[in-house]
Length: 242
Ligand SMILES: Nc1ncnc2c1ncn2[C@@H]1O[C@H](COP(=O)(O)OP(=O)(O)OP(=O)(O)O)[C@@H](O)[C@H]1O
Ligand SMILES: [Mg+2]
Image (cartoon, rainbow, N blue to C red; front, side, top):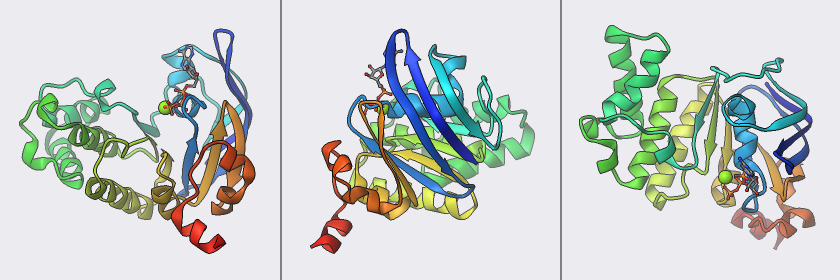
């Protein structure tokens, strides 16, 4: 479903990351972790097609989604940005979710039903008439997630979606993501909290300074390269290792 082979990115003369190699199948969840500035956000941008379609960057190697390489924005991929303020621009919570759906050609009762479902999924239906900028940062994060969910993309990319959320809201977001997975969606999530990550994802990709330090199941967290990348060993694994 998503496969990268020696996939590299340069922006201007800067090498952002190099030779990323991994593949995940449909319905799998990939967790990406790594140091600040290691290239996580840029990698998601490439998967969605924001780079090179909307932001410049020169890629090499192969990035295939559903077996195709494309140089444009991919409709089958939804992305929740690291900062929800980059994604929200409507006057009301309702319109924010409605906007993308309308662009996808939905109208009438179907459109309304999809908006309502998505807002209910993140618990924001009761705020539908509010200005998104009256919401707390965490609620805005949820709104950004709802706008992406509403479009029902096959693949959902999330860039540190719980970074500014409290514990309870974080659990709620992971619960929603768990339901999406059950329904067969493929999910890629960038997350520093490796405890949340191991309880959710099947595969893990660890980046450090633009290099792939590891890819695999939760055993990657025991590798010395991963520790050196400053990635926290999840509690569960620490206990196992004694
Ligand atoms: N348009 C750009 N022009 C020049 N450098 C860029 C550009 N976009 C990203 N970079 C650089 O690429 C590197 C990786 O950035 P990126 O945002 O992908 O990292 P990240 O792993 O998501 O970091 P963080 O954990 O802080 O979100 C950084 O050094 C950043 O400065
Ligand atoms: Mg980032």
